[in-house]
Length: 473
Image (cartoon, rainbow, N blue to C red; front, side, top):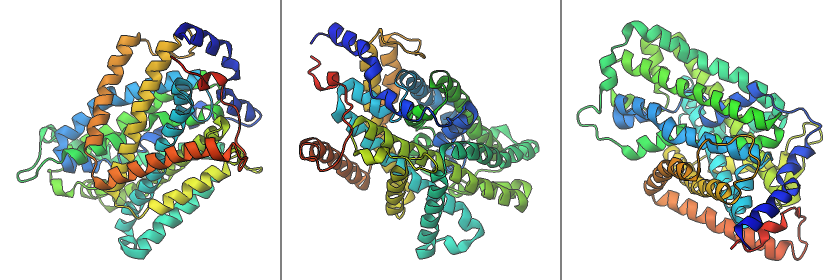
């Protein structure tokens, strides 16, 4: 079938696409307004400078400051622009799953959904681990062993129950958590001003300290990605066509400032001791600059930030599963909502169980696994974006990236190169995890399509548009 005929048919049938299903299903329920949505995006991506310390330890102050200054232009802004265009064009729960589904068909939608979901739940586990990293500074009981694992699991279960109580509750909770987690860094920056020596910002590594580029780029990438996770909530946002671009821009500005201001204050106010710059070191910096009170305040802020991070990430994971069920990729039971809170309870439960299962992994391996799976998915997402723009240039787009196709290719080329580089840093454990996930995803897709559906072993929604099942050549 010719490209022009396909484009016209898809445009003619746009009102029947599955992206509208989630939106119409929840239209009678209260939706997220722009302010809670901004803070949910902020926590999806960042939640503050907590966790950025390893960048200084890996490559020194200068590289870290430049990294958090330049990387948003090379990576975060292109990702946010793509998210704004596609989420407003296909405003349904599932986000990137819908985009790949519309671009290349249901198999690729299933594949990107699995990669993104697993990177999300592993991210949840890293959030719990990071939270305990700060708690152990006050309560050494949780430094290691069974007590540490018990604390991580207990935190995950409690926070998952909070997520179950409703999206609007989570959104307004995110506002409060965001404010209280940012205040310690604002105080740290203000108190640091008399002690700041700008020459310290130009420091590279200390003598005898070798630059760890793998740790540096993984830390940078982990702290500035997941912008597109907000797209899985498109069906739950009030007026998504108008809300998404504004919310992404606001969250992006907040995120950049939340990293740069603390890094400039901390690295400029104290002499560099690079071996100390590990997760949790901002609390030690607060004590050196302003005393124990600010240290405790910052540690409390770290815990609150981790809670917000967990809630935002779990929300995206759960609603992504709901969107995949609406597309027919997962059984329909994943689209069932709680009678009391209107939340996808099964998605929350499954996400929590996987999070608990991987919580015992090493933190560095968690971050590398997240980045590798996320990189695979982002390469497919970039391809979906470019394919949809080329094949469907006349489709109505409430927000449109102001570039033609050659410019869009260039915009995606730089972050794609960085994704390939991040993947090349993976160790054997990360490659094994990613390979197993991909193999299980392919097996799941063919099993559900050729066995479960044909034999009626489970109930799936049958909402895939017929156009997606045809040869596109």
